[in-house]
Image (cartoon, rainbow, N blue to C red):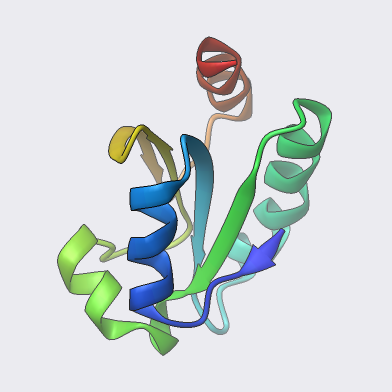
Length: 102
């Protein structure tokens, strides 16, 4: 899973990529660290493009995308957010939603 470091780069991915998963984590969040490999496993299993950001390093993304808790998983399809899970991630639901876009 590749880290996105700037808000401009994130906007470029949203605009130019057909579909991808964005994982938002925060510094010092133990749940974020525990869920990260599980989300990565689901995306790898489905051969699905995925990125992550550190919310505390990208304040503009936090405000523009309403990322006020962590962890958050967002699925983007054709430049639009089609699925969001925050705090408690249902991994079977996430896998199902990813498979819907394949």
